[in-house]
Length: 414
Ligand SMILES: CC(=O)SCCNC(=O)CCNC(=O)[C@H](O)C(C)(C)COP(=O)(O)OP(=O)(O)OC[C@H]1O[C@@H](n2cnc3c(N)ncnc32)[C@H](O)[C@@H]1OP(=O)(O)O
Image 1 (cartoon, protein in one colour):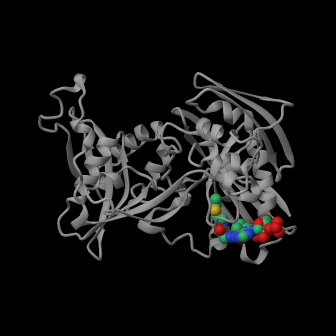
Image 2 (tube, rainbow, N blue to C red):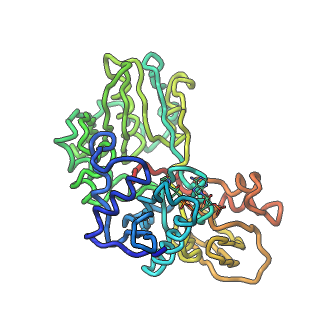
Image 3 (cartoon, rainbow, N blue to C red):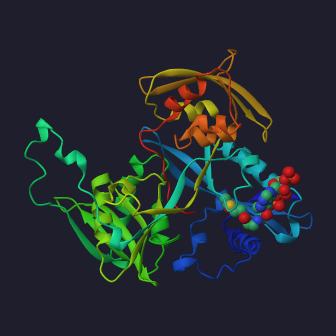
């Protein structure tokens, strides 16, 4: 078997092969009509070929920016279009593709790769760990009343007298087709401050490559504007049977904007329930209902998987919120690597250097990927038996150190 990089000339054969692996047809649009593969970067694709030159496997990568804790933006390879023909499975084709791809990414100087896993059993062996989570929240309209925020009544001398005038912000309903630029701009503002979020490169919007609201599927979009009329949030939605308003995504540059958009869709007439797709499982919205049980969380699942390609570079790239020191003994079974690092955090920045000191934690690189964005507590993986803590306080210290300013979330589909 040979693995080779693709060029623009390979687009048709690449797209045919990956669709055959998924048992789909390239000409059949995904939900809403977006041809996701139009955004593929063919200089980042790989084809696995048999000895007589027949393509049997594919993998590709998008050039994204990932937001790390501390509002740090870094490049991340978005691994995608991974497939092996049903006739050639379980013969090591994917393993060979992954090995080739990881080497190639390192060769380009990349230090993080990310993906969405079609099945959760595939990617752990290649050093990826689930790092962000998502869920849907279903709210029956008759339970949708929001509580008065308790903090509003609390004494705050600096804010005395504020919050009593009319709300100067506004919500306008537009059609998806007439507000592409607003969506692109608001999403970009949002993702820069949200740990775990990925960039949506301009060409994705231009090509409408993806799921709604990137794709051209008909949608209404509630656009929120601040007091100066500047768009600062949106909710893209459609209404279907049975009397359900489904929100594809609620993008807000701050929590009050999210609340305003939630209030707007929950107040829609002629519906019996609202489904918010892609909310973080522990989103504050649940706490905002007068009835705590109003919002039912379902479909709680992993979303972004993270793989560190260069441990010291990745750990020093993110922001940190507490000073401390940890010795991490990191194994990378797939690549046959092993390193022990002293992580020292001071004033929000980390230093990470090889050390001979006794470790505080021993872990696989995939588990480091899971805790890296702050969305999985190291102690959870200690309790699950995946990370080994060498002293009683090590897990608690790691929990405190790895925590992000807010829980990471990603809703970009690729
Ligand atoms: C980021 C993305 O693009 S996600 C999309 C992934 N693609 C798909 O789901 C499309 C349908 N599936 C496929 O094309 C293939 O089954 C693939 C790509 C998942 C696996 O390809 P293969 O060439 O069969 O994998 P390979 O032979 O290298 O398997 C390596 C190991 O992973 C295991 N493995 C592979 N796929 C799976 C799976 N779906 N579930 C459980 N274990 C799996 C194999 O058993 C093997 O284990 P072993 O090393 O202990 O023997």
